[in-house]
Length: 221
Ligand SMILES: [Fe+2]
View 1 (cartoon, rainbow, N blue to C red):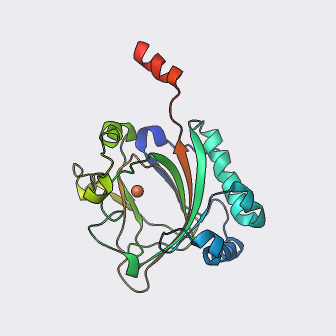
View 2 (view 1 turned 90 degrees about the horizontal axis):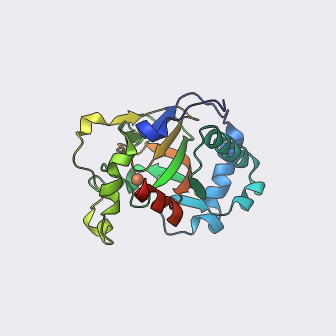
């Protein structure tokens, strides 16, 4: 399992079907505990709980196990220019879906991150699957760097130069995992009915800023 090539650098994302981490009811129970705990849900984001401190994972052995396995995969792929940021536990439902608004329109993130999104339920076309297009994420680096501080209000990070038909809905059963660089254009799909649900754990890493030395090297050679 640790020998999966994530090919993030050239293709921007990798979806792994099948429940490779063998997730079962035990992690679903932990998800509910974390989702309902005020300490984690009090964060200003709708339907979302966030764990910022890795030490808290000792209270949640199954989430911890999943986290360690993701780290093993990152290590195997020699993705060393990232650092842990936080873990999100999200239940997306129809009532929070807003067409034409981020994150439901193609975009890249202002802060470049590497994310591992794990589906905790069977996500069909009606459950707002993540949509992505295979592209070298570095192609969007200039676009991202030129975003103004008020980019959010103007939705400046919306990507308009790719046809919608080029995006693939990443549907999948419980345990399906998607690794992606947020510089790869992506969006969350439509939640089309009251029954729609996308329950996920998302482990977020920040790309480290290059050191002064590295930046100088790049300029000189
Ligand atoms: Fe995004």
